[in-house]
Image (tube, rainbow over all chains, first blue to last red; front, side, top):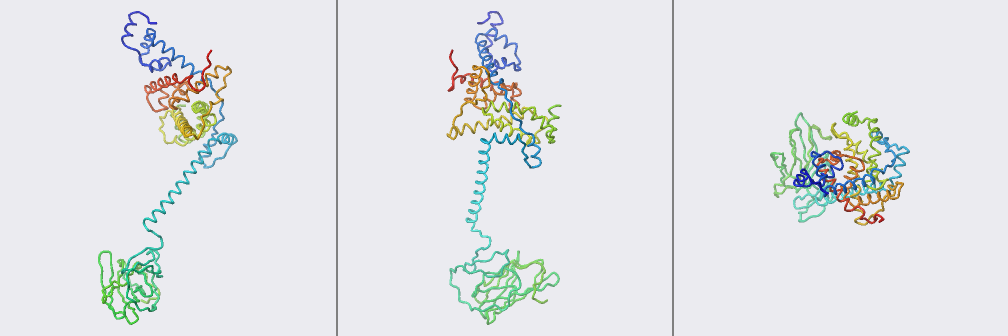
Length: 295
Length: 183
């Protein structure tokens, strides 16, 4: 029912307050125009009914929600202290609490375990896929040299033992098979050598101050051919005077290098047949003389 | 002791301060979670998680933190997350729809118990966040401003949200599988 006086007419003209404002008024929440709303409810039947409805709902909700008071077991504060020490010493209360949570916790733990296993598997698969896609193997790398695909020990191994030859795409002129005269005494990776392939090793060295004399020994070359040793530095290269391969297919060549400027690669080029016959990599750095070679 | 001093002590990992905090807030927070999720055991678990989170994260907060609202915010997030997962499990059929928590039926009078179940039923049919607004306001006596601190919104937005939630409650109350006795 609407009151019929002067102020009621004013309120009717100004419109009804928002439902949320009505509810906030009923719930005694801070409002700017509280007096106006109060007057409006007093004069407006519709808002009066709505506010009564809100009062009824509010009392239902309060009765249902506020009257439920339980005593819950304490969340043991022990867990907080023990977290600091990375140990979870369980009290009786916490043990009882854990027991009560058995329906909830295990699912979460299993879910976490599942995620961890999935991650490990994913990482494993990624690693395998990467290794396959890049054709990367830790011990053996492939190189193409003089038309012959051979396996070569990884440079970091410093291994002088020649690995087995894998395949040969092109016919290579047969070489005279001669046993090496001198056992290499320097650990350096060379181009792959089989019984018929030219090879080269550092067969001796001697240090003198900041420079070092190196002796190269070639084997399995074509007897009588002229071989030129080329020292490949980072920015330039230097060719030594040609030497002649002896009747056993071997040659020796010596040169002095600066200990601070060691060649990256040393080639032995067969001048007679105009081919690159042998390559030597991983030349030892520093001025450490090789044992077995006198100064 | 002011809130700022309490937060200072908590940030300094003061064990006594944590004990006091738990002493003061554990029962209301667990009760709130109990009403929100409708399961006593889950509520206990979520309360434990809430206080662990408080312990872990208190160091990252500012000294002007509204402590109680912040704790309730963490509890609310845990509660809503639980309800979301629960509803998803129910949706995909991994979990059956539960009957209402009988531990909430502690009223002496039968009618009060019935009302409580109907209210709980209506709230469970609403969006969890809407239900959380009503739980905080009617169950825990939070003002709109305090609810705003919990959800990180302004009092005006809370006013509209509470009103909307009440309207939704009106629409669902007594219309679930359990209906109010006539006469």
